[in-house]
Length: 185
Image (cartoon, rainbow, N blue to C red; front, side, top):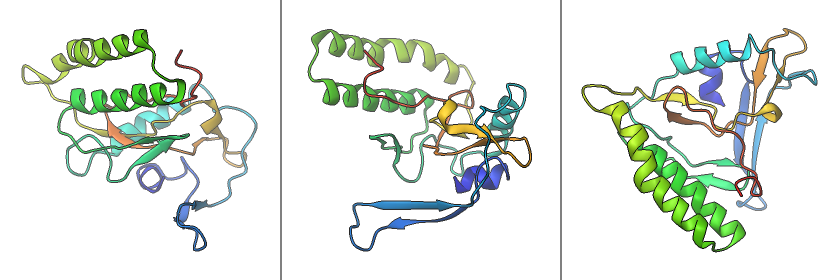
């Protein structure tokens, strides 16, 4: 959230602190400024413009895809290992998601076969051409858990506001939606 705030001030609540509970280091907290929000999702014209601004300004500090720390989408931890290839980064994201799905719902032969084909055939065929023949992708900071429950409108400024990010440096057009363990099947 700090990186989002630094790139596009006012697009998210101002981060104040993060840490572990003294009484139980397995519990964590995040504190940010209070923003009075409406019950409305941000206007269609303004939210994409702010996202484009974020994806334009927030460039990976080391030129790689990933993030310096693991992040979470609900109960699923994203490892965010640094990599120099978008294909490899996206493959790891999907491998993690598909593995989490199997952990939640149990073994499923059809799902395992579809997962294998997606990871070994579909992703390379679709993404490898984006980084060959002299083409490259500059990793950009993305929210990575963007859905209507993580966006609103600032009641004071009428501007879009986002929160509860699971950020990573990814392809600038990558924005995943929240993960609900029952939505993949």
